[in-house]
Length: 267
Image (cartoon, rainbow, N blue to C red):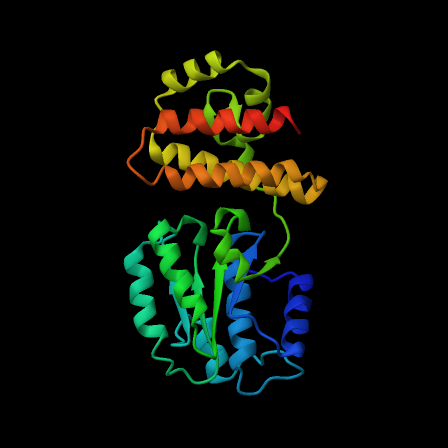
């Protein structure tokens, strides 16, 4: 059984006491498993039949159904952790806009940072006109992997960091996530081009690496508050979205690296 850290419980008790709920929350930090446990705990607290001081009882019918993933008011999108497509959001819109839930309904989008641009734009329209009593929760590796317009409509909750194996992910042999910035800064463009051409990196590999790189940068930002990290995350996020179009991945990566290199030059 996954245990929710006490400091996270305190955050939600304070939120429940305020009775001021945002239409959309963006969960960052910790593992996806802990995030989902937090979502269930939040849904229980909102819909518990016999709460005690804003805490769910855990034994009533609603609490039990939520715990067993059998509650109609807890809607999950992208449970498999794959790309969130426009069809997923359109289906969601049909059900959400009916507004026939009793109590609060919570819509949880797993790995929302994998959402396509068309799906993100459709989701934004839902967030602009969400019926009362429906709360969205987005799981993201870090907030800067989502459209700025979605971030602006969400309350970001950093649930804490967790040690992961992200730095071990390689773009090229010996060029792991934690060494990528040094590689960009200390190598000539001609050498970088040769690495890109030799690697023959594909669309999926580049996206996986860049998302891991963004997560590493965001964790570093939380430690040192270096605003350059956020600038680079925004650059990378731009090129991740461009890569969803029919573009040459090698050229796309080169343009990204050149822009990051320029940013580091004037940092």
